Structures are given as C-alpha cells and as structure tokens.
Image 1 (cartoon, helix red, strand yellow):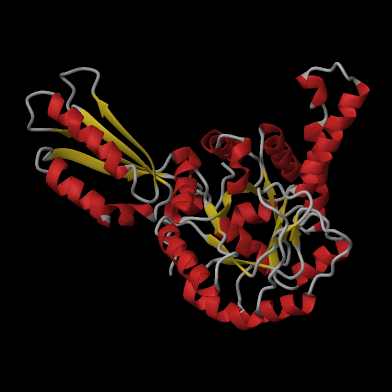
Image 2 (tube, helix red, strand yellow):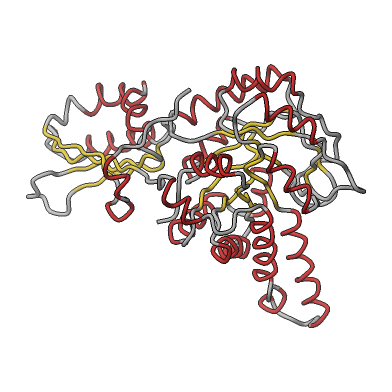
Length: 408
C-alpha cells in the first residue's frame, strides 16, 4: 500500500529541502490525473479534499475513492481535509479517511484562531492525525471558487508566529506573504524577507496556499525558506476548463465523453510540471523507505451474552453503533450475529480506528466507558477481543513497532 503518514512525509520534505504538492481533487478525473502525475514523476503527493468545494461532489464518496486510489498507488500518498472551519468538520474528515487536516481560523482574531486551532490539535492528535493551521489570511482573487467576494490579505506577523505555534502545537503552518487563492491580479510580489524571518522563528514545515500564478523562481525561493508543502488547484481547474471549451468548439454536438476527452491528460501534465519544479521528483522511494505506512486498526470482539433472546442484544448493538460511532477516530462500527446458532460465539463487534493512537483514546473515552460498563460488560462476560491491522498492509518496520500517538 502507498497511503502513508502525512506528518512524516511533510517533515521528510522539510528536512530534505523540497516541497510536496497538495492538489485539490474535485472529481475522478482530477483524482486519476494527480495520482498519475505523481507516479510519472516518482514523487510523493497529497490529495486535498477542500471543505468549500463540497458542493461539487459528495464528500464521503470522493474521500472513499481517494483512499482506494492512494492504497493502490505506486508512490507515497496522503489525504488531507483542507480549509475546515469547525471541529465537527475535522471529525467528519477523519471519519471519512483523511489522515491530515487543515483548520482555517485565518478570518478570526488571533486569540480566536489560537483557541480553535488548539481544540482541533487536541482532538486530531488523539487520533494520530497531524494539523495544519493558518496564521494571517491568504486573500481570494479571480479563479477562487469559494462563495463570497474577493477580500484583502492579512500578512502573517513574525511577531505572532512563535507564540501561536507554542500555544497551538500545530504540525505545519500556512503563511500569508503575498500569495493569493486563485489567479493574482497583476504581478504581485512575495515578501520573502518576512518568510525568512518566520522560518527562523519556528522549526516547523511552512505551507503556501495559492500556488497557481507563482513563477518558477519564486517556488525555489519558497522552498529555500522552509516551505515543504504547496497547495495548488486554480491552474489545474484552468487547464481542464480550457480543454473542455476547446473540445466544445471542435465538436459542438459532442456528447459528454467528447467534451471531457483529454482532461485527465492536461491536468496530469500540469501536476508533473509542478512536482519536478518543486524538487519532489524521484523522492518516492526514499519516502517509502523512511515514512511509516498509514494503517487503520480493527478492534474486534466476539462474545456471548446472558440474554435468552436476540432482542435485548440487538437493542444494545444499535445503541453501541450510535454512541461508539461518534467517538473521535472511529471510522466505522459494525455489529454482527453468527450465521449458525451453534457457533462458539454468537455475536461480534468490529470497530475501525483511524490509527493505532485511537486504541487508548477510545478505551478511555467517557462515552465508551459508560456504554461498556453499563450496557455491554454486565451481559457479555464471555468474550474475546483483539486489535489488529491487515497483514498485507504491514511492512517489516510496522511489524516491529506500534505507531505512537502524536505528542502535544
């Protein structure tokens, strides 16, 4: 499998002075093109699922497709929920398969941004999930697809960076230094002196949102000043739309397949160009050898009960699915009943955790403790439990060590 630990992957880029592309996916064409571009360049890549783009697709379905594509990719892939605005959004993203989250408090006051980011860090880290925060505000310009009008940037203050990082414990920091979402109007200028000061103050990977429209030389300057992740979408959208319009001109009566012909290819070409430019090409093998795979954990219990009929057990299962399914880091709760009545164990639970870190947080979570102590354990004293990962997802490195929770 090639789904890997996002935090370790970004820190690999940070230590080795290159940047990983985080490309927004809004359809299967974008998903195939981004993976294809990364494989062509032998580069690690991040698939971005962006909250303000959810009107374009069903988040749960495209997230599942992203997980599937990542697992079968030949290069390291991670999946990030981008521009989440609430803790509930973050929990939803983790539940659907994202192994990294970005919380966007950039339009809040400094203190409100700190409080929101810290809440997200606490809950995400308890699930083994890294957090990207934003300090300052990256403005929206032509081509940005978010609702609302264009706005003005708020540059990241170096005087606030160290305090923000110390109080939030965010894993990565998105900065505003003249970069914009969408296409710049005219030729802006990045404040590289400001970026260098920020880099000197905090030893965490920095992130640039709004990569479209920056020059080749600017990308090199960004990477040299601590940028290890570049978010990129507008130009992918632009080349895709240009291809569709060209197809429509060539064949005005063309059906859907004719109109989207070649869209994947032009998106992939742009992805390949970026990954080569950002020094990520040919890094895949090093990342796969040094970065831990991302493996979910299955918590399974087989049991019998003191009940003489199935009805009270089925009621308990229904309550368990409701209660346990809302614990942070739980991706799925499945309850089952044996096919034959003479089976050694009559019932089972299968709870899927996002990461090994969830084993402890789930065990100690008040909702689990109350359910287990009041509804489950008193009636299910004959039980066996095991936490496991799929053997075909394990490397030798994983077999020897259990992933540790993120500190903080």
